[in-house]
Each structure stands twice: as C-alpha cells, then as structure tokens.
Image 1 (cartoon, rainbow over the protein chains, first blue to last red):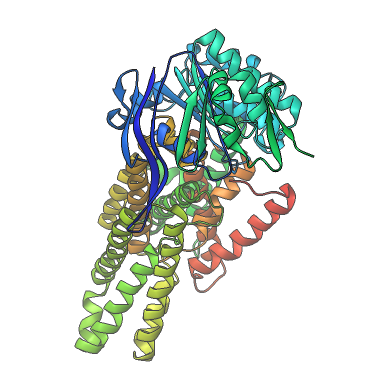
Image 2: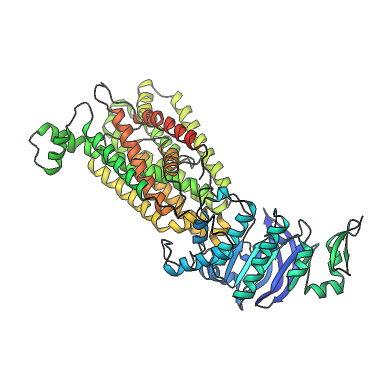
Amino acid sequence: MLTVANLSTGYTKGKETVLVSADLSFDLPSGSILGIVGRNGSGKSTLLKTLAGTLAPLSGTIHLESRNLQQIKHHTKALLLGIVTTERNFSGLLTGWDILSMGRYPHNGWLGSLRPEDKHVLHEVVQRIQMEEKIFHPIATYSDGQLQRLLIGRALVQQTPYLLLDEPTIHLDLHHKAQVFGLIKQAVQDAKKTVVFSTHEVNHALQLCTHILLLHKEEGYFGSPQELISQGSIGKLFPNTLVAFDPKTQQFKLCY
Amino acid sequence: MKQQRFGIGILILCSVFLIALLLNLALGSVIIPLKELGKLFLGSSTSSSFEYIMWDYRFPKALAAIAIGGSLGVSGLLMQTFFRNPLAGPFVLGISSGASLGVALFFFGSGLLFGLESYQSISRTGVIIASSIGSGLVFSAIFTIALRVKNTMGLLIIGLMFGSFTTAIVTVLSTFSSAEILQRFVFWTYGNLGNLKFQELQLMTIFILIALGCCVMIIKALNSLLLGENYAQSMGIPVRQTRFIILFATCLLTGASTAFAGPIGFVGLAVPHVVRLLLPTSEHRILLPAVFIMGGCLLLLCDTLAQLPGLEYSLPINGVTSMVGAPLLIWLILRKRKIEL
C-alpha cells in the first residue's frame, strides 16, 4: 500500500518556496497501476520525484508499506522502489547488460559482481523486454524504443515491489507504446508490483490503469477511471475548445 | 554477440607497461644494457656506477613516474565520471592552480623578504609545503562550495573559475618579481620527476594509496553515476557521501603529485580517453586499474623521451607529455571517429 497524506509538492528557489501541488491524499492498494495525468507543467514530474524521495515534500507524508518514505535509508529504499526517469544522456559505451547489471547493485556485494542468481534474474528480464539480440551492444546503437525497454528492464531487475516511471512512452510510436504498457501490465500481473507512472496518453491511461490521479491547477483528483469520468473531473484536463471527452467511447477526441 | 571480454587488452596494456618501465630504466645519458639491468635486480652487479645511477636516480624516478602518471590518470577518470563530461580533468577543480599559487607566493615572497641566498637553502621543502598548502586551501574552498552548490555543472564552472583566478594572481605577482626568481618559478611549472627523495616518494605513495583505496570503495557508485545522480540514488548509492569521496580522492591525487613533481598537465585528461578507446567499456572495475597502469605507462615513456641518450639536457616533462599525448589522442579519435565517456 502506498499512502499519501496531505502531501504538498514543490521546490525552493533561493528563499522562495514554489508550490506545485497542494494537499494530495490517496491510498493506492498493492497491485494497482496509477496513471498520473495533467497538462504540461501541472506537476507530474515533481510529484514523481517526491514519491521517489529525490525531492523533499513541502508538507505531508508518504508511506510505503506503512513506513515513512522520509525515514527509509537509501539502501532499504532501493529494495522497495525502482525508477525510470526521462534522462537519456548516458555514456554511450555502456552496454545494455552493463545497465541491467546495475539494477542488481542493491542486492549484491561491494564490487557489484554478478552472482549466479543475479545472472539468472538478468537473463529472465532480457527475455521479457525482448532484447536478446542487442543486450551486449553499446547503448549508443539503441533506438528510443529499445532504450526505454532497457531502462524498464533495469528497474525490473532491481526486483522492487514499487515502480515509478516518468513519461515512459514519450517519443515512442504506437507499437512501442503498446510494448511499454504491456511490460507495465505484465509486471503488475506476474510479479504483483505496484506501478505509478506519469503520462500524456490519457486515452491509454484510462484503458490500462486501475487508478488515475489528475493534476490540475495545484489540485489533485484521485479515483478509478470510472469514478473520474462519472464525476466529470476528467473534463478538466483540457480546455473544451480544442479537445473534449466523449463519454460514449470514454476517450478524448479532437473537436473539429 | 557475446559479453565483451577485455583480458587480451589488459594483457597488452601490462606488457606495454613492462616494456616502458625497462626502457625508462635502461635509457638515459648513460645507457644501461638489459643484461646489466637484470644483474642489478638480482643484486649481482659489479659496476658501482650503474648501481649508483639505478638505485639513486633512475629507479626512484621511474617509481615517481608510475605513481604520478597513474594518480593523475585516475583523478582524470574520477572527474570525467563525476561531471559526466569528457573535457574534465584533474585540473578543472583548480587544485593544481592552487598549488601554483602557493609556490608562486613562496618563491616571490621569500625572494622579497630574505633575498635569494637564504631562500635557496629552504627551497625544496618549502616548495612542497607551499604547494600542499595552496592545493589544500583550494581543496577546502571547493568542499565548502560543494556543500552549497548541489549542481554538478555549477561546481565544474566554479572550479574552472578558481583556476583562472589563481592563475591571474600568479601573473600579477610575477610582474613584481626579479628575473631570477621568475625563472625558478617557471622551471617549477615545467614539472620534475627526478629530484624526489626516497622519503618524499614514501609520503607521496601513502597519500596516493589512501586515495586509490577510496576509489576502490566506490566502484559501484562510480558506475551508477554514469546514469546520473537520480538513478544512482535509486539504486541505493549514497550520492552525497560519494560526491565527497570523489572530491577528496581527486584532491589528494592531484595535490600530492603536484606538490612533489610540479603541475604535470595533460596526462589526467588524455589517459582515460586513451584507455576507453583501447578497451571500450565504462565499467570502473576495469577502467580504474587500466587507467592507473596506462597513466604510469605514458609518463614513463614521456620521461624516457625527456632523457633520451644524446640529449645534453633533459627536456621538461610537462612539455613532453603534451607533445606525445596530444597527437596520440588525436590519432586515436580519428581512428575511432567517436569519443564517449
């Protein structure tokens, strides 16, 4: 269970405090998929960074399995929570295998050498992310889709009950988006993980997620996709002039 | 494709290293033949002059070259990984500029205060102390700033600014000094591996070993920093602590070698690239030892060139490192066409 109580996210800029989202509260049961949606600049990444513990909350608390995130040690947190960020400027000499191996760092010894059981986990994940062909090639040769699958693979290798992904489908075509969503769904079904991800693919999120958090003007609306649709909060996502929610198909459509 | 193996590359590196070491010991204004070298090591040499040259001059100099080349290379690797910037080197933090400032103040100051005669007697120890203090001061300044500036790129720029600021002070100071003292200072900036005494070598080695020990402790952290600080943290790496260990080790490595041998440029920047071009990997378990060996190797070769037989004077090591290193690096990059961290 991921419990967020009265959470305000934001950052300090010099002496000024910039509030991004205020007073978010929700309980996310284990085994759920939470999609965070909202317009550009609505605070999706800030919230994810706060949930990952890289950004301190302005106020409020986050509990993972009833443990306060702020008080969990680095190493313990690495066993609970895996992340996929939008960063892409990695050293091109790294191979896919190198990056996957790092996912085992919280589990293995001080030199990070792979034990047989680590290798077993890696081989399993390589199959799951369908990277058998390229895994020993330098990542400079990877396509966007391959790199994204690899980064999700790295988080899977870490074997954490929670996964946080920041815009995992950005820059991908429909086929590769479906692949990424497939990986997420599989992780939840097979390994009983809890996944939180931010996305601009509202239509896909409505199909895939068990829960949606809609961020709009410092406020958050949490619920199952059905709840948000019936409350009408989903319509807040975009100004109605260009895009509108069609309740019949349960999808957003262009208005012209 | 199979997982990369670098066994052969490492073997080649080690043999080149051994050859460089033998060349360095054998060549000089007096050539020691290989046979005699063997005898010297077995303790059965009959020539006392060879013994003198070997144990009092060449052997300590070769050890200094290995230690200094290795530590400059490793500190370059640390900086490039830390800043995720291929242009970073041990000098970007301004450590060696700090040492230069210390030595400049010492030379110019003692020249002004005591005149040249008394200054000569305290010169050697004085230079080491002055450059240690100089690099130590810049080092603590950077530590203090690293507490406040969380941004790694910001730290890089501040380091560079420290460097140009101290260089500027040195320039201003040099206008007020006498030609003789200025000449001494310029000679110091040429770098010198030769006149390290055995105790100095021991002291330097202790510093370098401490720093290398730190590096080995954070191999996992160094690897994961290649994905950026967010990922590193998410894999349980204490990023703040690691930043300090990296800064500490770099300052120790650069500070120690600059204090004892002067500011030897270029090795730190070039060696990690040369190694990565020969052994294309980002794995620090391989890079760290390979960079140390390659650094030692490069400085041994440069030093051999600097003291080639037939040359009446030995050339300044600082000039030779760049003259050898720059074309080597350009050639490697042209061959591989791409430079990666």
